[in-house]
Image (cartoon, rainbow, N blue to C red; front, side, top):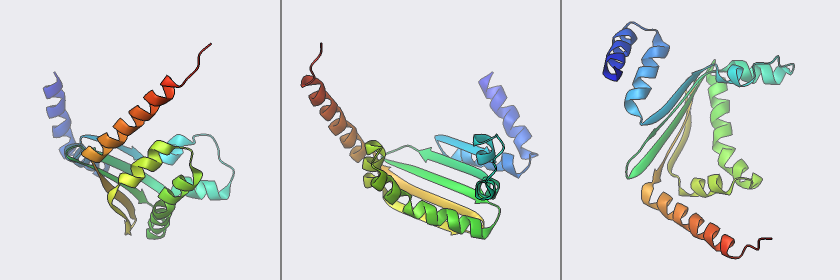
Length: 161
């Protein structure tokens, strides 16, 4: 049944609109992926009063991301915007996002993972802003093991009542 559904989906996708073609390409290229049309409208369905918020919500047409697993874990995120200027602004924000995360300091895991990122590329081409990087599976495993040791050491010193 699953194979029949896949075959049917692939046949239908040949005649589909560009969104479905992109969906098909993303599903072929990545192990885990997502593709969302008008994602900010979905995230904030209530009426937004701010002109700046409306502009942001309307600027992002699609967002897609994918992860490919292996000895090197590859991650790619693409944001399709209404204009090249919007894509350039999104790329500029993406460039500073790791710094904002580190300054915020709320999510130690994300900041630690950012330190492992290799080949970080953030760019805008036309109306598409993209971010890509890779993570060494070995280094990621070392980080996870260090975190597990840290948590285990914390539990040994805990006092319970």
